[in-house]
Amino acid sequence: MEVRAVNFIVADLRDVNFSGADLSTSIFLSQMQINSTKGDVKTTLPSHIHRTSHWIN
Image (cartoon, rainbow, N blue to C red; front, side, top):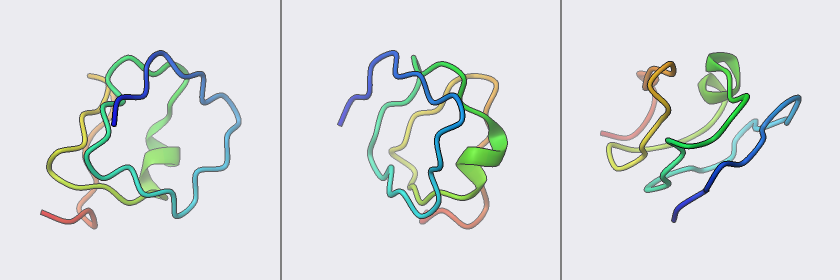
């Protein structure tokens, strides 16, 4: 799933499953938002966001 240039400003992303999603071109996505989501090794993040330890490996 590719999520192109989505504006995530003030979005509540708690428990959203981004497994396999390409979020690399998303804007206004914060580390705090990502920390509350689910994802996996196939999830691609913008360069300023770090993968969280609770995501599925």
